[in-house]
Image (cartoon, rainbow, N blue to C red):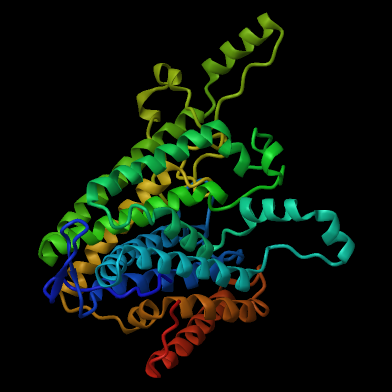
Length: 434
């Protein structure tokens, strides 16, 4: 969905970039990037369709509090966008200068937000004029910005704008910016954003409005974390340009495993929110003495004192794809896509780096070319636009309680129709760009 999303292979002609010394290629597409992008678009098409089908396994559906296969798709696409974003910005800056390049990017990003609004509307429906007037202009805008705006294209557009000051800087500055965005999101979540996203009372309600309204995919402040994923992708571009493809692939995979392990390690803090009989008894005793209820645990600042009483064998969190126990209180340290937590972002970035490295090995070092991924990858915006309407048509005859066989038939027809339409556009040389 990132416009001008072409990329290039290391051994082609390059021109020097005066911003940070990276040499920017000017011809031939990088096959691994197209294939990786195509894989993410194909995955998106599948998981969007099956979300409301009861017969489909939960691992293919989105979850707020643990990492499923479906939850890997959007972060990987943001990662790919970040790779292409840095490439196209460096090219444009070297060709027309920084000012025009930045203006072009802002206009293009706002265009993605507008396309999202055209596709999904305002996530509101008013049956009468009186109901619309009663809602109020300020409350309408507050609700839109808090939650209703944040579909995939709007998230990409807003994240590109937030990452814009950093995208052309040297790698060390982008690393610092990525860390700053994540730490900033943690601090804001501890201050008010956790309650803000979950529709609970918070200090922002009096100024913002939309009190009690929940958000998804991080809402307004979640853009900070999606921008961090864009910047992670931009760093993959630097790795690819710095060395030969097979060396870059091993570096990408090694970095991905490190980030994934870090994300999982931080997610182990979520086990501190399991019921603790000793702590509960002590809290009850204290409450009885004080004739007051014990203070609830903060969902963001973990109760580290529980490490002293928790057996070490219970410190490990469940692996990805496995839901946590229902007795665990929801908290920031889960791989939490609803708040877009640090463990979620680190693990998702790790998965994206590993996949990127594998696609480089398969497609840039090896000969792999998958036509379906090429078709989806080279026309991602058209794929996103078309699949939405095909999905609506097919789900009208595949109700949520359909048996598995009917669900699978519906998925097959839906996927085939979307692919055939995109393949036809590809054959005619029609590629949707902003």
